[in-house]
Image (cartoon, rainbow, N blue to C red; front, side):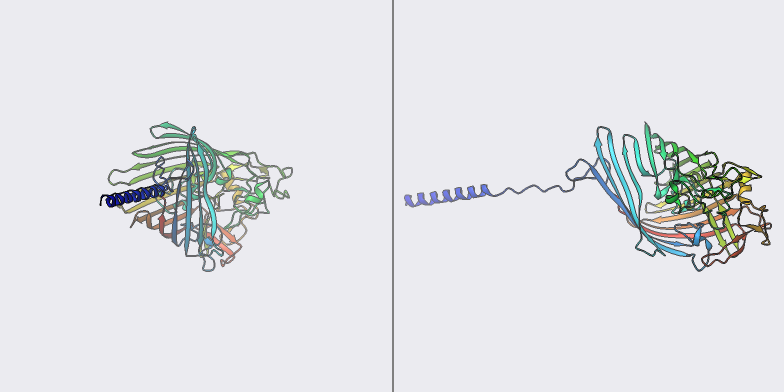
Amino acid sequence: MKMVKSLLLGSAAGLVAVVGAQAADLPVKAKPVEYVKICSIYGAGFFYIPGTDSCIKIGGWVRFEADFGPTGGSHSQFWTGGAARNNRIDSTDSRIRARTVLSLDVRTQTEYGTVRAYNRFGFTTSTNDTGTGVLYTERAFVQMAGFTFGKTQSYFDFAGGIFSYGSSYAGSNSQTGANGTIVAAYTATFGNGFTGTIALEDNTARRVGVFDASDSTAPLAVAAYPAQALSGPDAGALAGFGIGDYAAVQIPDVVGSLRVDQAWGSAQIAGAMHQVRGGSYGNNTTGVGALPGTAFISPADAYGFAVDGGIIINLPWAKGDKFYVEAAYGVGATAYVVNAAYQGQYQLWNRFNGRNVAQAWAFDAVFGNLAGATTGLQLTTNWAVSGGLEHYWTPALRSSIYASYTIYDYNATASALICTAPGGPFRTAAGGANAAGVGCDPDFNVFNVGSRTIWNPVPNLDIGVEVMYTRVETKHDANLLAFTYAGGGGRPAGIYAPSTEEIFSGIFRVQRNFWP
């Protein structure tokens, strides 16, 4: 019996030893692989790029927009071309748009501080698009040790239009907006929220046009910029934009700003220097229109400037409430005072209404022949003031009201050049010849006021409605002067009376933001 018990116990011990040995040979369960590691250094939404010490945040949004009474997009009521002809053939009374934007923000800690690479690009398609839409870029820049190189918002800009979907199109203070501009800048941080920036910025992004009144081959037509011949490297790249007789770029704009951001809000003052260069007197390739001895002679370069100041105050009675006011003044630098989305394409305000037309040309300068002599560049002057108030009714519902007013002024010489330009559109009120431009005054004002309400039924989903009233006030005397129009796009040729025109417009927008 003792022998049997010993055999059983020995067998059990041997089995346990064998099982234990086999168990020791089994693989140990690995810990979960951390494919996405959160990067908390730079705030919410960043994670480490696998295998690197760089962090990335992916963001963006998707938007649907319906515009009513815009003629263009997002309240751009006074564009040139078919939109402003205001007729049933080619002027859309409503339009819808789909747009999406994706952003990538990559940051790395280095011995020089944070190195950042940022880009933002998008896709858009709208009513009347005949293809599959358009791809475009908004931002593409690198930052390190206070330096910024690439495409970003101008350092002159402050906050114009922050309470509106599209007020800047009507003449609100300067904003490079989504299009941005190319810069090389350095920002110094002084502490306590104070910063100062000096930047070199792309000159072409702030051009609205130079008009050579001596070039009879490029008349100043109603509803269009003068299609003056361009010379130099800009000729091919910019021929599609209304910059008139701007010469090729020589130097970038110089921009400086001082800014403070603290708990109470933000404030900024900024200044810019903008070089204005004209082509040759008369046609740039034939010399036609130039005075004897001045063919292919150009006016001396001039230097325009602009200054801007603004403040945003966080109001105490509700979280998120704020008040804003901004003012800008410029000489020969129109696009620093009013919005210039890209190379001045929005800086022609015109609107037909029956046999009337509001026609307002915006130029940085005018030059030509007057009283048998050349005039040199005559820089224009403008200023703008804008303001707004936003209130949160609840954390998910907010409304804003805003307004802006812009004054655009030509000096006496510039006015005379425009009003007596060869081939100009000016006629008497009865439609007769008016070579002296009697009753002509190219000065104008732009006024807009509106309101926007946004509801957030869930976080990062905006459902907004905006309404706006815009008026272009022209100074021509309709009792003495009329315009001749060549016709186009369903708008008949003939004589049109100068007028002040106004429009009501609206936007309905649904936007899902998916940045953290």
